[in-house]
Image (cartoon, rainbow, N blue to C red):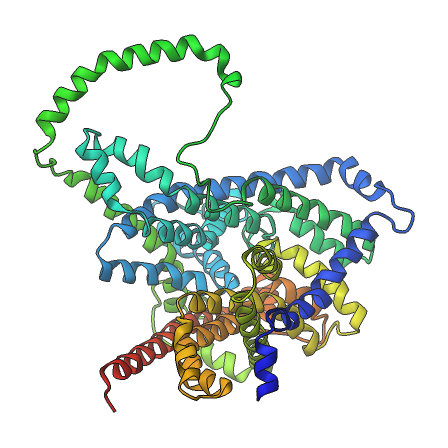
Length: 590
């Protein structure tokens, strides 16, 4: 045990297993792909010239940037006011609203995309309702177009925009806005000049995450878009499926990766924002605006008297109730929550339909599609594969990720930041690039088309989630408790088991559940490395969505929707028990 404790005290040793898996499955293959794209050992830019020399390729690249930018802008326009109203709600209501936002985020992207296929299709919910009401005589073209792509992408990415903004807004000192109002600023001015700048770190983080992840979207555009809505990820996937031109595939992947790296380099290197109170601007750059600035200063001085008079009269006057703003704000919040939850509710209800096709509302209730799932070997066999792989991924990622989180917590900040970003790379760059790199990395190991290969490919992303969750738990852990136990004669391993582990156990369990959900719902990377030998449940769903409308898919999507609810309940029980144990220890209860 002393040997294990000595290893635990070497931070880099704890991080080594996570880095080893990342390098073998993803890092080294990525370098090999880059060298291949440069025609190593001759080294030329021929493959990039060929890619950029074809108008169709450039058009798809620009279209990818356009779709990603517009989807990100829509998420920001909807997400910022939603996050604001959630952050300003009472504590109990805020927790409920955050849970309602998190639940769709934890649901499989494939299940959520399928829900929009059911709603927007020619025989879907909207068209069926309009036809039954006599408002239209033929289905509206609501699917297989650009609008449907935006609807699906925004639905998937909106929680990722809202959550970072909420986390920053909750840390803003509200007294600063009150101070601005006490000095005569109108509510909108106080918000725009004080609150909004302080919330910018969350806006930047959410915008970067959403944009970079949108660059690698594959399933949603393929399922909801038309032929003219293809993104670069679809182009790369077709290259892998139709041929083995490694140089061309590498060049396409690194063009997409280069865009992501440029964006992250320009806007993501300092997510906390500048430490200075205001940005410093060289006066020489503004020399030609001196006259306009002088006029503005003069007019501002003239308005000082008027502002002082208004301030003195409004200082002790209660603010007029802006009831209409409250109504609009809560109405928008209710609309956004409905938009996030309604598609999943629709699929769950339609999965109980007794008809031969899906209907909403169902004419009668039946479990026939669930029975079809549990009696069809193709379906339950795929589910069994996903379950086995998910458990293996969760176990491996939890052990390796927890060790890495412990090691990162004990490393110098500069090195810790670099290693953390390295470990988080699989979930911060376009997933299609991760899939391509993992595919070629597992070819080197001879693991394509094996359950071990699928598990390793999914583990690199699962480790990232475990590191994030466990690191957040360790950030609130008081190391003096461990030191106190050891000072009272406890051996290092005993102190860890009896003191440290019980306090961080909720984080470890949360990381394990995140890893399992990530594995169980993963489809893009799995589609690259599974070959035709390993069929997981998401791959079976994706095959049915593309080739046929099998109502059994609705039952499977419902099960994938219920899975995160079970996860939330399990995590809540774990945290509640940990809190109860901590209170008992504090009170000295037996």
